[in-house]
Image (cartoon, rainbow over all chains, first blue to last red; front, side, top):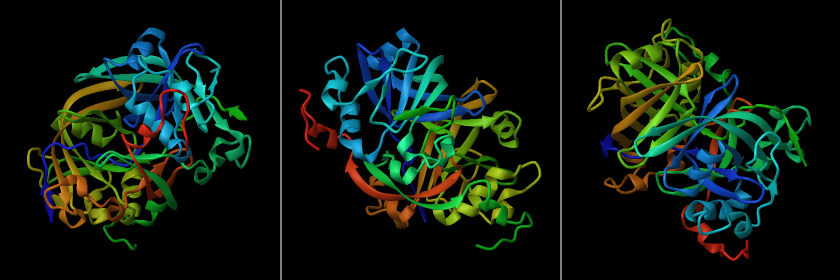
Length: 198
Length: 198
């Protein structure tokens, strides 16, 4: 049995990322779950950012931002960055996060996040009252201590990373569970005749 | 220590949804992890869809689609829908999924998915070579057996739902772990003076 509830934001679970804007002297952090990849080759991603906030202002001014994957270890700091404004608070100071310089852009990355993506703004669209900023990923930084093979980003130990997951329906943070299958593989077990075994 | 790896698609973890297009007679299903909310009031979401696929063709023709949350129970079927083309396979027949009519649009919903969102296409943009379709969420269907309170979508038991999570970096499916905190709450424990306790 299904019941209807009208228009709801029941998309879950979502990643939790920290978007950093500005520069090494004056930077801001916002917490975002509304983010998506757009393209895989010459990879781009998009983020939803309110038009009136300090981060949106900095992105429009500087044309770049970094995306930093949040983890359960920094949940309190990540949440803090989502409920405070960069106009009133120096969030790097308040959280104790460490700024590291990016390779190609002004916006710094966060040392305490295990994966950091440098993004150059390539499109700025409005969807309703909200900005949708599209960034081209120029560089990827990964903590070496979570890599099985120091030369292969595919060996990142996601269990050790322990990414912070956002369950938007009820405003809760969750951890990741267990690996349950290989994508692009497990579906091959289904025949296309309409018969299959589980 | 961090190492750089150039432009990578290291955004994780992501939700796994099944997007249904077409109508009750002829419908298609694609599996998507590249999805984001755009706006919360008059909620909208956006999905990345290849320009040459059958689903993109149906969305452009019919101007609507549904988003159906995939679960670990239907992992094999979900993966199958991501590695086959609707031009060659009737994916409802192949997976055994049950089509249910939507309330407001032609595209059906999938009975086996615990949450279903009916979306009306309101924008179609290109990001690089990929379509980004923005849909206004018109209706939300939720399985009543996972609701604590039949009148409150916020009481959905996400542990019972067991949503399928996609870890794009290594093409793996994962399950959800444990609740670790309340969003918009746990960050209040940080002072804005720069001192905080963990």
